[in-house]
Image 1 (cartoon, rainbow, N blue to C red):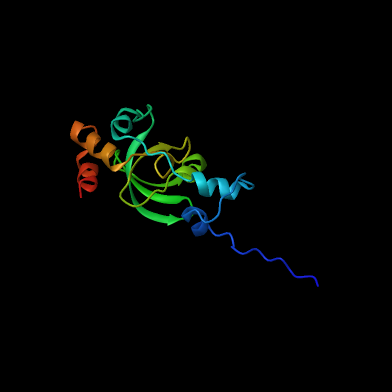
Image 2 (image 1 turned 90 degrees about the vertical axis):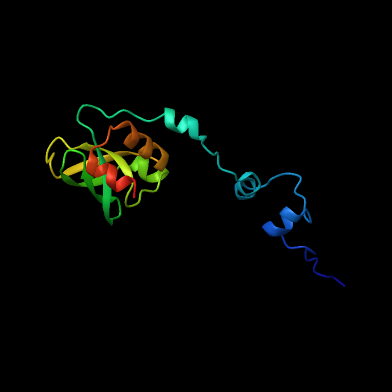
Length: 145
């Protein structure tokens, strides 16, 4: 008589990590990511060294409201409130939330109302810029909350 030969142990990530199952060859990319799976953590001293300098037209800003998808309302250092778009390169890498300090590049047309966000500062970077006196007073008060 023929019997179905079912595997005695079902593959689950928990079984794999416990060592109940050993995989001699990683057969799929999903298993490889699961096995390797740690993100690189950026050290704080390098984080404070690698802050970008704003260009001649760029302004600092604090996000005041998330409008939807990739649009946010930003209070800028020149005293204007702009509807800004998060660039695709930044949108895929970093999450942006209300109260974050960002660098805004105003558009060539509609300079007073529109712009692109091209950099988000971490909390430590924003506090160091505030201590150096680079940010205006009303932005400094919103960051140090």
